[in-house]
Amino acid sequence: MARITTSIFDLEAMARQRLPAVLFDYVNGGSEQQLTVQRNLDDMRALALRQHTLRDVSRRETCVTMAGDPARIPLAIGPTGLAGLTWPNGEAEEALAAAGFGVPYCLSTMSICSIEDVAEATGKPFWFQLYLMKERKVNESLIRRAHEANCSVLVLTLDLHVQGKRWADAKNGLSVPPRLTRSNLFDIAGHPRWLLGMARSRRRTFGNLAGEVAQAKDVAALSEWIEAQFDPSFDLDSVRWVRRLWDRKLILKGIMHPDDARQAIEIGADAIVVSNHGGRQLDGSPSSISVLPGIAEAVGGRIEVLFDGGIRTGSDIVRALGRGAQSCLSGRACLYGLAANGREGVACALELLEEELNDCMALAGLRSVRHIEPGVVTLQPWLDAHQAHTETAP
Image 1: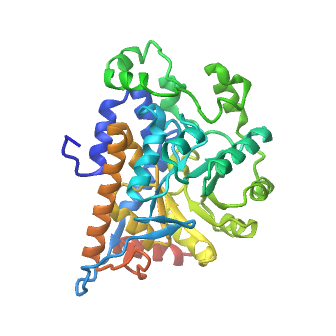
Image 2: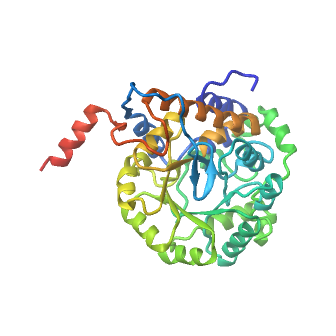
Image 3: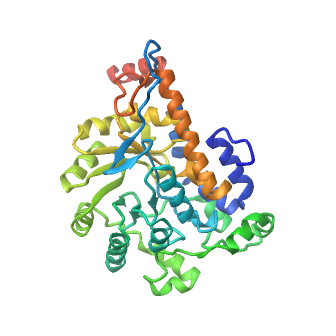
């Protein structure tokens, strides 16, 4: 990239500059007061890395498998809706960057590019994330299409019984494509690079739903249909139904309680993602990293534990692995890269995370991401003492 880019935070700043506020606020924000968004970041940073210095770390191993798929670093690009509104054909560009780098890519149900678009662009297996709709025939069709596109993993999101209230999106008048309002007209017009780029995009609405529902031809009607489709009756039987239809790897995303993790095992999931939806659903929930150790302990190695929520540096990956995860997902970090500079921006984000991961391992005395011994990642001493006092207080 022409501009010197040293971190994900540089990509975030570039994305903020390039995107209209209506889109950047969607990418960057969360629900209501955004308490959980901030907790994900703050609690991650509160973890300390205790280093061993008398070790030969000249050779470090970062490769893992994630739900059976190889990964150059323990990270997959997580599903993010509307990525194709931040860059022309954005989801296909992200998938190509992921394939070129060597990590899994997960396509969202609410993507702009369709399942078939991404399959055609990459020619390689990828993951598909499913939101269950009230209309079962739409769910069945999406699962079938993912299977026919040779998707290797289905990621079923659990935490969208209703959509969290995202105040900024409501104020900005977010729609797909973004509609012109009196408040955002000049802001959108003031981003000509984005406007010209979107003119070259293959699609400008939800690609996966275009052929599924009659309302897809009308943007307003489609948005109303989607809002009404999130299902408050989603339960264990819903997951069992998906498990019967999908005969490949199944990951359940949105696990925040040990009891739910145990039920995921009983249902036959191959992996879980400890995730609070990036702070975009239940505002006020704990950070993902704070509940990760208890969930990993409850799982006891019976299935894979993936982590999502607050990954911004390579050392954050080490923190998550040290607290019980086998690998991670990151949506925003790579989406900042996409919004900043397309496929090259995503590749830049992945390269930065890999470099930081390698540096962190060397400085902490770690030779393999598959073995981070207990005590390397810990709370700061004063937090340890406070937690011990809290647990023993009457």
